[in-house]
Image (cartoon, rainbow, N blue to C red; front, side, top):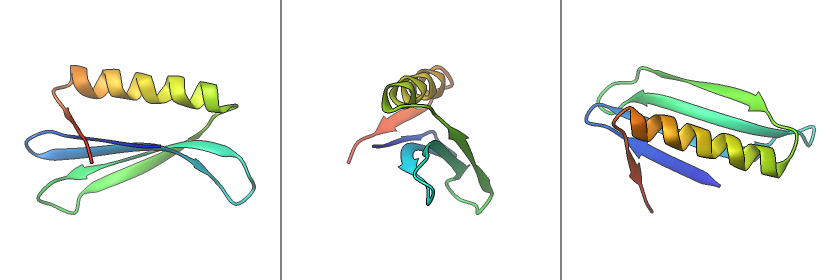
Amino acid sequence: MLQRWKSDTRVYLACLEVDLLGDLLLVTRWGGRFSRLGGSKSMPVASVAEGLRALQGVARRRTSRGYAEVHG
């Protein structure tokens, strides 16, 4: 599951991924829309349910900081 947000100058992505060892991770990536500056972060989650809750938390924070969700 991939979710994307953008503001006037920034982009933010969050998704649940499985690593090579089979562990579930919440992966977030961010950067500038017009520059190559950005970063990423991976956080292990214990279950799909916990990962979905974490994704909802990311969505709340992005929306509260002025980002708009990108569909498609």
